[in-house]
Image (cartoon, rainbow, N blue to C red; front, side, top):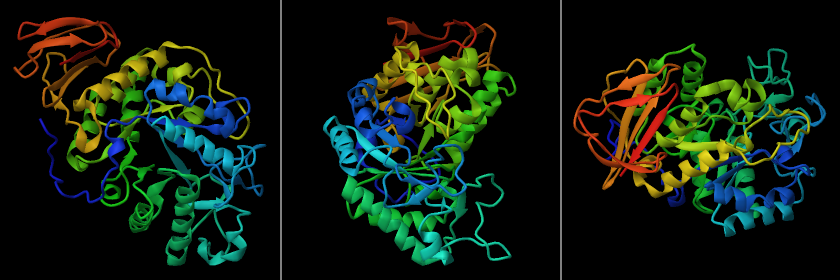
Length: 434
């Protein structure tokens, strides 16, 4: 079964072929190792590869502004110079070595890019003051209606700024070897700007672009993937008992009908914002955590794992100070590894245009249980999730789910038919594969 919606032909860009079954791994260099450097992080690359990740997203690497800095070390999203490298992270040659080693392992590396605003002491504030948004008194301002007081808002109505920002992004791809970008608050900038940037980057090599935004329009000629914040909020609400299953179904309805099939929506349990400001994955999902993790990989989307999740995500990492991840073997890492292995082996679970849509399978407990099929060619996945804290006995309607399967986590063959009844414990899930 192939993906079908009302947007055929809408997406014009070419996704890089290496994104077809890719998993994204976000790496917070400052907190990743005690040293907080590219050189130290490079020692983890084989482990990241073995976990099943493919694309490493490095948080911003530039020098951090001093003026109006938050905390001792400041936010990496307060960029002092777009052509600079934060010396605390290492040298340019060490960054190149990190990327080169990643490439040798078959990994790709994208850079977190903050185009919307700069630090208050970025050299552009003096050399090009007309590039900044001003208030009625002609003073530079933070991004309106935010508490981002450590940064000054750029004004992308100035087309000269487009050329400068595009040239800087091309420099990091050409000189350092990056394979694309994650764009911070991408929707705060004109879509036409991002389309212009994508065209310039593609002159160097095929790139992968991830937008921190939720909009179909950005996928047409600019971004391969976009955030699925609404999925995260729905799943957390269900986990905490503040939302019902309909919140999640609303997301899938929206995603299926409003976004072209080629779009990759990034599904995540945590990221740098969630971990620092919203809480650890256990705080947010409690006993529903494993079900949420499985759904984030099995359902339609490109999955993200934030560094430290594989070690249990035991604490909220400080954002403006040094605060190391507590590395240890953990069952969450084993679960992610098992899921990523399945994703790569089963084409129905691949990303965007390469994978398949989710087909709802009606069941007898739809107030609490979500069931669906993803199928491509001879590959099929039938997934069932009890999204409640109570036990459920569920039957299924229709014939499409019937047949012989391997219970992926139970590691046994089973046959499903019209008389099948699944007994599900609270927050239980089953993944059946062909």
